[in-house]
Amino acid sequence: MAKALARAGVASRREIERLIEDGKVALNGVVLTTPAVKVGRKDILTVDGVVVAEREPTRVWRYHKPVDLVTTHTDPRGRPTVFENLPEGLPRVISVGRLDINSEGLLLLTNDGELTRALEMPKNGWVRRYRARAFGRGVNQDKLDTLKNGVTVEGVEYGPIEAKIDKAQGEGGANLWISVSLTEGKNREVRRVLESVGLKVNRLIRLAYGPFALGTLAPGEVEEVGPRVIRELLSDQIAPENLPKGDRRVAPPMAKVNPGAGKSRERRAPGTGPGPVRKKAASAEEKPKTVYKAGWARPKKKAVINKPRAQGPKPGGAKPRNKK
Image (cartoon, rainbow, N blue to C red; front, side, top):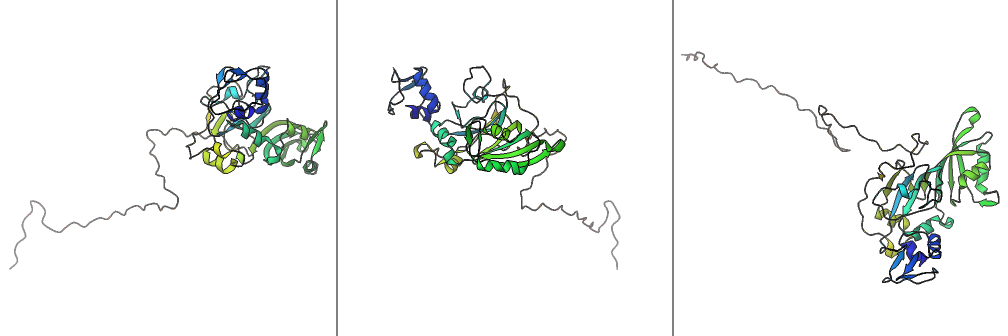
């Protein structure tokens, strides 16, 4: 049961087990008390009385999470969530991993709960890349290199982490921009590990998750990954019958109109790329410029040739005399 609902994009396996414990899941009208139930294709599943739609091929989206949003469907404290601020028209999706409320950047979304679980597991070795702005004195590259061997913070063991100082500013280089790469992604891992070496992170941006990059997505924008890319990059994590077919046209990035929360910060970290460039509307007096394709030669201007006038009598003039 848990696998079937996770594949349908209802929730993760762990969340589905909690839904079953709360008596919110039914099979053919019978409320379930355990997830250890086999499900056939003709069975009818309901969650909170809503029939679960028939599963569709795996889909994936890239989303630029702004700050001040919680990566959860519901928050007991009433804070705005990622899923409340997604654009209209998306099916029910699940996030691959999480970003805390003060973090921003790339968040992968999918309708396949099984894929979510596979991509989150450290054994797959998918590298998460971050850009962190931190404050602290006396921290140099040699000290950050010690994190390559892993570190234990307050009893929690963290695996190898690569951290490189990109830029140092302020008095004594106390304000740092640091590139961080890791493969585990435990709760608040980057912040806690950098704090263990004397750095206080005041901004954290995820730039990439495995082969998927944030690119030029503006905060709040979401863009679907094409079926061909999914087949090329994720075929090892998706069952063959769930792989998307064809090469569906991918729409341009979209964002929720007038989101209620998650206002983006105007300043960007080095390397995150600019937002979408909006072209100014051309005035009526401006003539459109001809665009030539690469490799084409521009036509040369034609030379103006003045033709000589024919010799002859002018209109109305005297006729020439015949010579004897």
